Amino acid sequence: MTSPVIRCERAGKKFRRSALASLRYGTADLLRRLCRRPLPGTRRPEEFWALHDVSFEARRGECIGIIGPNGAGKSTLLRLISGDYRPDQGCITRNGAVTSLIRLGAGLQPMLTGRENIYIKCSELGFGKAETDGLLDQIAAFSGLQKSLDLPVRRYSDGMYARLEFSIATCAPMGILLIDEVLAVGDVAFQMRCLQRLNQLKQAGTTILFVSHSEMNVRHIADRCLLLFDGEALALGETDALFRKYYEATGFLDRALEPLGLAPVMPADFSGDIHLTGLLLADGDAAVVKTGHPLRLRVRYEGGAKVASATLLLQFWSTTGLLMASFDSSLHGDFEWDPRGESVLELPFLGLSAGVYRVAGGFRLGGGWLSYQSKLLDLSVLQPHLSEAHGLVALEGRLMRSNG
Picture (cartoon, helix red, strand yellow):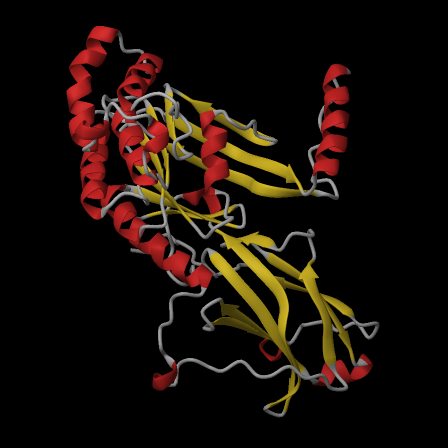
């Protein structure tokens, strides 16, 4: 197997919420660099992670589709790989020259004609004048701008911008190609020509990272997909499975199981003499865990000694409103209640696959609810090692030697 062309190892990028915070933290970081002191590794009060702890590899001739909702960190990831941003966490290595199609029209000179822009951009790609002369007709024909080639680019529409920029950038194979939604402004016929061109580049050995909200385009070109959600990499794997996971995470997928009697309805919130007052991770502040790893929750409640006679029931709901799993304390006779109102619940193996879940629940007695809270905790479950996509749940097992 060939060595990876792109390797991201726990890469992350922080941003500041205001210009004042950016100035204050930027000055402090500059002074630290001048004094050769390490930069802070944790998030400061007015900072947020646009991308956090993302790891994956891409090999020669492979296309990885990067999918997720707006604000998930897709463009930030491409800008880290292109070198526009420097990671605040982890490292990124590239083995090859990078060609970026990230911002529409950013690489074109608006006062120059399309023809002049072709010569400038081809020169930046390393082509001499004679080579560009040979590519000119091919670029113009692919873009469909033969009649507009001698007009200033500032008179081009967004679609014409995208046509010219894509045609120049993909006129010859390159090491790494980064694409971020630049095909969205083109018509369907041009998009299909672009996808055919990208497949040709893949066969020639170009590594492609492709960001798009178009499922058709991603399915056509991507060998694998990386799913980002709130700056976290939820899963990396087969395209069909990752799109299903994407729809589950955003609440779009509705399995319509209620007519079959398989979709329980979430009760309404209410509090009784015995009720939960809080639920949080026992081992950290961020509600992010991994499939197959232990899950430790700090359970806070009111009810004193009465709690021991009730049953704690925690439910894990998907964003589509499906009840995915439950914890029932009545199945575990050794569960310890603290009369002071706080206990730790440990699940030794979290079987939920990658996704975003709402933890709800409360106390029950004699088959009825004593109290219920519909939103105790939002839990992001990541797929360990980002290797393959799981199904709805992961199963715990043990291999044993056969006696035969």
